[in-house]
Image 1: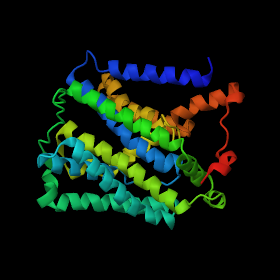
Image 2: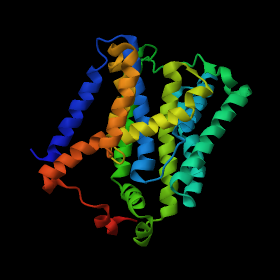
Image 3: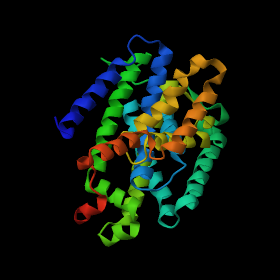
Image 4: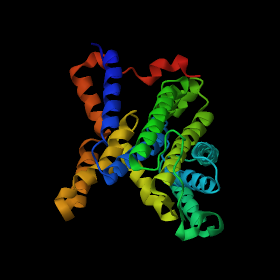
Length: 327
């Protein structure tokens, strides 16, 4: 069986595993698994911006906040989640376009500071505009989606609802990264000047990288709102953006399944280490440091490096070999 034939079987196995994972567990474990799926979506967005397009962002949590608050305000006003969530995503997409403009002029740590300032700006607006956001007290009692025949009031149905949304989001992103846009994102990451010489509109691609990545964060925020049914500005601070960045780096920046692996490490690993009582955070921090030091390409990168070493015929072709298709 070739590698291409094995991939659908592997994906089906992982999907079945995700379906069976919460069975037999209590509400808390199901809540943790649901959080893993939600942060995987946010990390997918940042992976597109950072891993594929090479544009660093420390504002992913702020877009989660925009999506969460938009969904919360609309659902509390009586709108259904299926209407509120797309509105939040569109708003994040538009704001992401605006935030992408500084990336046309500044790069590297300068761009990181710009996105950091935006994250702080959103936090201050959420905290001070209490007439809309509830201020430091936040918003609570957001209803969970009700689809008549399928209700998500309990944890297990909401997990399966989140899993379905995650699968759809992953399929959409899969199509994006394998489209001409995806090849243009990679070319922008590798060498912007060369990409432009091959006909890539680097300005448009840079803006799209921020906008699409922001929309994914908005979708994650739209799921956080009904999951926890309480949100406040402190839930979307800089620490949350750094957490999502850690997911992308640990899982493997630029690898499609990296966000899922990274989110599992950041969300699930601390729960698995709780048997060590008060030492679990120390052990978790030490493991993350070791991974960052010795596996700079992320955990997914280990498998890729081993495959390239022992099966060189499967080595991926470089993006520049597809330059004729970059339009």
